Image (cartoon, rainbow, N blue to C red; front, side, top):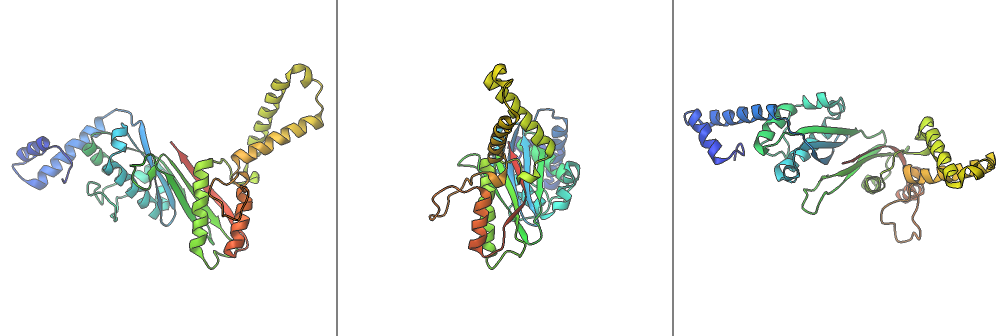
Length: 307
C-alpha cells in the first residue's frame, strides 16, 4: 500500500533490509527511481488537468501508454499538480525546469504515493517506479486574473469514466470589467465559465481582430489571393480589377475572423430562451454585461491546450 510494488518485490526488499519496514520502503523507491532514470521509452500518451487558485493552470502530464494515463493514480497526481501550480503561478510560469524544481505540497486530493517535500522531478521518478512507466511533465499554461476580473476554465473529459477535471482539451479565459464585477461575482464567474467552454469547443486563435499580428494577416490574405486565382484560372485572373479583388479578399478575411477570432465567433453554448439567433461572442458579452449590471465585459486573454 505504501509503494504500490508487487508482493514479490516487497518480500525481496524486506529480505534485503533484514525485515526493517522503513528501510525496505526506501530500498524499493531507490530501485524504482534508478530503473526510471535508465528508461528510454517514449512518453507518447498524455492527459491535461486544470487548476484554479491564485491563477488558472493547465498542466500536461505524459506517460508511455494509455493504460497508465487512464489509471486513477495518474489522474489523481495530475489533478494535484494542476492545483499546486495554480496556487504558485510564478514558479510554474518560469519554465519547465523551474516547475520541475517545485516542491510537492500537501492538499486534499494528493495521492499518498506523491511524496510531500520532494521536488516534482523526484516525485515523478518515484511515481514512475510505482506505475511502471516513465512520467514526463509536458506543457504548462498559466493565466493570471486581471485587476477587476477573474479567471475561469473548462476541461473536456476524455471519456465517461475519466476523473473530473482531466481530459484532452482544456481552456482558460480571463475576463474583467472596468467598474468591477458588479453585485453578483458568482454570475460573472458563470459567464466566464461558459466562455471557457466555448473556447475549448471553437478553438480560437486570437482574442480580437486588433490582436492579430499584421504579418499573420498579410500572409493569410496572400493565401486567399493565391487560392482565388487558382479557382478562377489564369485567364480570369488577368482581367480582375483591384476593386473586385479587394472585395473578394475582404470577404474571405471576414470569414477568417469568424472562424479564428474569439470576439467574432458565434457562441458555442446554450443561449438564453429569449434569444432567437446565435450571437457572436462580442455581442453575447454585451448582453451579459447588461444583465449583470456592469458597464462592459472585456476578454483580457485566453489559453487553449489540445492534445
